[in-house]
Length: 251
Image 1 (cartoon, rainbow, N blue to C red):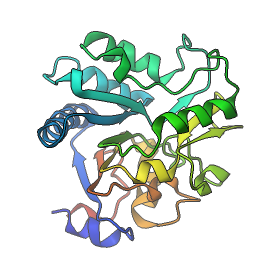
Image 2 (tube, one colour):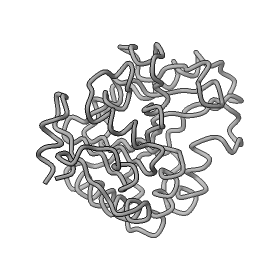
Image 3 (cartoon, rainbow, N blue to C red):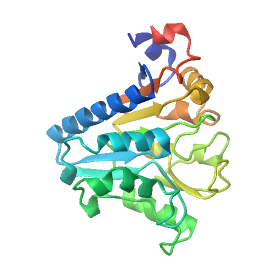
Image 4 (cartoon, rainbow, N blue to C red):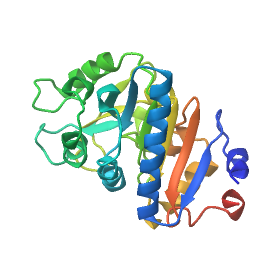
């Protein structure tokens, strides 16, 4: 099934490609996988640390998790990136995640690790430093990522210096090609220490970026090609996003 996808991906870790019939199936089945993965982690250890993603599919996925049975007292939530705007700004991934899911489950406040908001009293660089310190050398158990039509992941954009940063967990992003211009993002260092990295991608506007990500290893130009988990790397996509992948990859 997925062996050819693994062989083609020139990555240190094999990558699994799972193509779903449509966006609704992608969201539902990824929610199922999420529950199974978290339950599996919680059988092995006391806590499970997950990084959530924003974006339309990311938020639909969180909505789909609302009614699922999970032990939220042992789950910690982080974010792959965040818009550096006020805490109450609708652009914030964390605010959207609270509305979609976290306000509806019994997750302890101390388990929700938001990246700093712009009205928290820190400038962008200080916010990145504070977030780097909070993350420390934490190994995330599961990282959910979306992908942009330009193949960006988190707020690591093609051609930006952030794709080269080493040694920090969270960086300041200025002049983001996508508004708002100021953001915070996990680095490749932080993302690639994670046990499981899942890229959840829907829509034909992502098809060329997905084909690039699956066929190249240049993370500076194609950031999505540069993320991988130490135990598992999965591209969970719908048929529209997979429409430009070579047949051999889908076999």
